[in-house]
Image 1 (cartoon, rainbow, N blue to C red):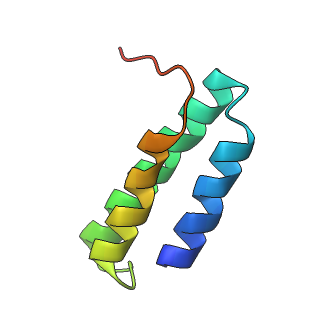
Image 2 (tube, one colour):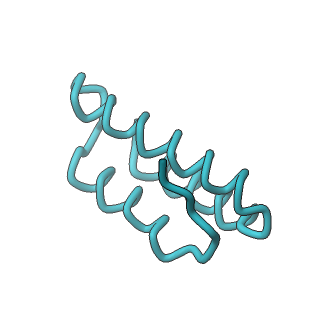
Image 3 (cartoon, helix red, strand yellow):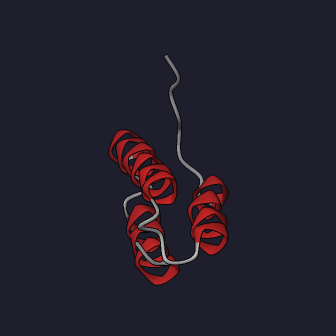
Length: 66
């Protein structure tokens, strides 16, 4: 996993932000996959990957928490 691939996925989430449920599912999935990549050492630059995935918090859509 690379910062660039995460950047692309963040932009994909931005593009679907009008559908809050879909955007929230995509955000959760991306964050989970980034954490796994950092944990298992497959993230090329863990700090940069973390910075990129945190940019999803800037995208406005409704989020639900259970």
